[in-house]
Image (cartoon, rainbow, N blue to C red; front, side, top):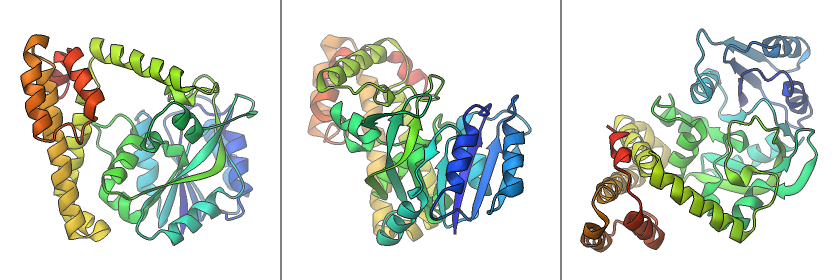
Length: 334
């Protein structure tokens, strides 16, 4: 059984095209669950009208209070009953074979529980730019793991059993779901472009590889240099990663039996140990960044000898730790 979990908020301008693309699927879903975050436009009415003639069940739930994107998706996911659950944004358009391809990928790869397809970037009017999200990532010199788009993802029920509810400490639902799947080596990333990813100017994500212009390697370097400056002057960065790892470790400990059922006892134990080790290394890196720069080299050398940079960015991270002062990063995790 295949479910679609959709989160909506004031999506009336683009929602009809996405709903129509669900009707055009060669393998239609067994249910669509829509969680609406108190839209003030016609979004709920559009969903209700769609449900009247739709050949598959549609469930619309309107939140009692505004939850934000991550927790709105959490509600939609929690109400789905399928063995495979696809996430849907309100403003994309799926190509007809999307569900069929992801379902077949899940059947071919029983050892994976998270499946992510590529997407064609398109403008507001759904005119494709000729670039894809994975193509943008690779052109910028980023690893494939940078592809964490929830709107391109499908999850097995067995993984969702481990990861729901999405912790309120996690600001992005897709980062929590996909990056935890990555920790568990449960992610399968496809080169298949199975949807149009509409960039209309008001998207929730402004990650530079989501832009319609294709970044070259130099532009990627410039963007990362600018990111370095932002990390040097704003809280976040290591603190966000440390928060994610600490939350993931806590969830693995609390749901130990579920994780063992998912990946096996040895794999679950090793993943928890490595995640806790990475969190400790990040804590040491955060502490290093509070020191005067002239005092950092001995601490960086010790962390390097202990293998801390092997799991935490290697030489580029050493350079960051020598340059960045981020006392507020530690404060933001307390």
